[in-house]
Length: 196
Image (cartoon, rainbow, N blue to C red):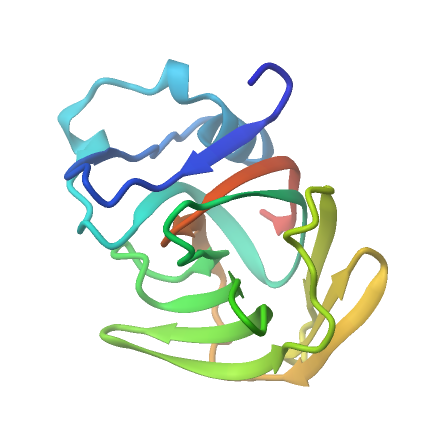
């Protein structure tokens, strides 16, 4: 769709996914190009990886300070299978399995959950599941801020829905990823603040 930004569609019947790993002089433009510039991906072999049939992922290497802010516009477009989950956030290692993620999950009680990710496991830090309706066909603004002391705030359409503290990770982050585990989403106006 023209003008729809990044459209993330996950189809479990496909076995491979192309991942973006762009590096350049301007980290802010790298993440924008990494997320929106799929047509300009390098064809180097290291950029192609196979993803399990349970998720599709896009990521970019980007130095992000421990205190950061993320803002994006999300529009849910549905899923014929009904299992919908989108996760995004900064990661600490090259395997992208250590860091934080904010996860949207639809269902009888749709929720936004703040997760601490570690190899082979994840922990829910905080969840909001009261009156969340991201499936109304309208775009929604999600803002996620982390302070130096580990305090994290998540806002949905200018309303604070999560406020918590987690000090598990004190290092700078190496990059940012978006993982689609089911559903069709349009992402626009993705901003990451706190980049070096």
